[in-house]
Length: 303
Length: 153
Ligand code: SF4
Image (tube, rainbow over all chains, first blue to last red; front, side):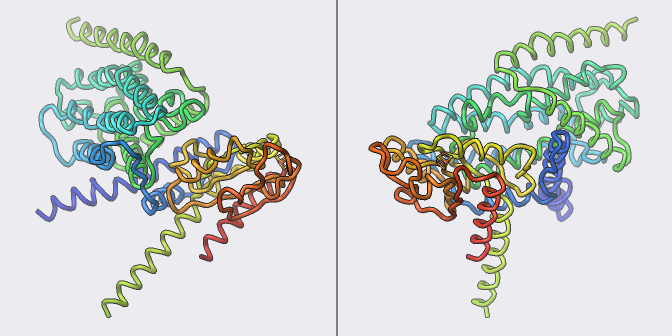
């Protein structure tokens, strides 16, 4: 009972995850700043942002469904925090596991995007509505290739259970045997987190702040926290699947940070894609290439 | 005793809140009729050369996300309602910085038929940054003055 509670509240769920999320957000911003030849934010920046947002007034605009407006950020963060339990955080075996938890985890991870979209549609402003449309369009664009890319390792291990997949990979670096899947998974993750080349849903120069335009204070803080947690989760998942399964925490952390560096470089290199370009990229190239890789994998098994 | 405890809790919480506020001022920028000179200086302040992100400053698109409204120019009759609406859309606690001589006194546009006057005829202003236009250093100095003011409150 007590150990269950610690699992849920402190490690690996809850508090430690929020702190890790903020640390990764800081690192991402710092790397981006260094790549742009700036000094970048101080180490406590995300913490200060979150505390400030939580202490601010929350404005509920007229004409929205109050329950949805207040509840959606909570659901979004809760979804991300629930997914923590099934993911091999820091290279340790996941806290909970059951057959087929890969699919559940991927859906828990898209809960954040879904909630963002609903929140935008519920807010009533035209910018939020436009942002919501773009968020959901993007969800439909990257979700299938992302899931398909994560299925590559699952095919190799012959299981849908994250614990069994990571065990089945057993130290092999699938990055070299399935490079397409790796790239699609990592770039799908960037789409999920709405990072620069795929930040059309929150394009500041066009639609103010996208789906979250009307959110202030607590709701905004919870959405941001959910996104930070999701960044850690996604990077962990990709590192565990493509960079040699479980290993000791230090090596695993280094791999995750390597992926973060890669993401930061891509962010600083690319300009924003239009929403139709994003969708085209995923369906025309991402999905088809992963399918091709599946065929190769499947064919290789019979040869 | 319990009252004291509650009081010290309150104080500690207030300290944390003020610390967070001081370290993460998010700006929103509005031009209520300036000649664009001041706006260009504000944009120059946000470039990598001055890198205000190291102070926690971020430019936000939505008034709902912002803490500090940074206004330039005199208030024209047309933009008066919009300025007030943006101010009212910002969540508490909110602060206003008026940048440029025009924002302080009407400046070059004083007495024009289409101009109401300076910013604080429409919304309360916390910090004034003089200059036509002020240099980026002066604008950063204005933000720092505002933070000192918040810290003292
Ligand atoms: S202070 Fe000078 S630069 Fe700024 S708006 Fe007025 S005239 Fe333009």
